[in-house]
Image (cartoon, rainbow, N blue to C red):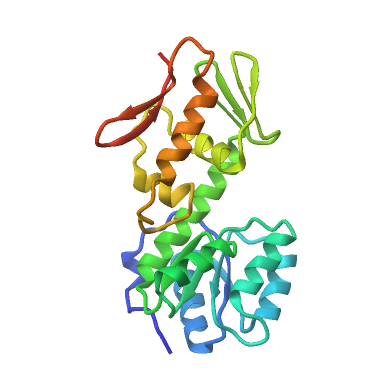
Length: 241
């Protein structure tokens, strides 16, 4: 059994109530999480196996799910993939004793939003859950982003500059959306890896450079002014003028 490190709930900042689904077959660990979340001001429901967890997630309205990877009846990755196939976009934090790079990549590609290796400190788990909830809330609150004459509509999944429609691939759209959400700020490569590619490690490839180049060509070619700028040694910045 992998129990989280002990920490007083009084040391944990309260950031608004969340409704959390914990899918964990280790009853003692699940009870600990349920109690710790309650002490932090949140409501947590517990499912002790994958099938029960899938049913609860499919029928309930949760802000975030915490899913153990290895469970009876249905493993965690199967639960997540099944929910994603049904259009469930609730953020998921995967818990697992499997911590190799390939394990994390597999979990994220199955539909997980974050991955935490056991044993863990509850303070870190709570912080990650809060981040996932904030990201989801921000995505729901904002549907249209504008930077100068560039406009991105999340609902229609469309991009226009100076009224001209621009066709982007899904990853390019996600990249541009993140840059527009942080317009006027330097966005680092690490930020892009974590928030656009869902990598919490450096894959040691030029994937960012390739996508930035393609995106820049699409949103700048034929227009008067550049809008996507490289900040040497730091990252990238989307700004008009």
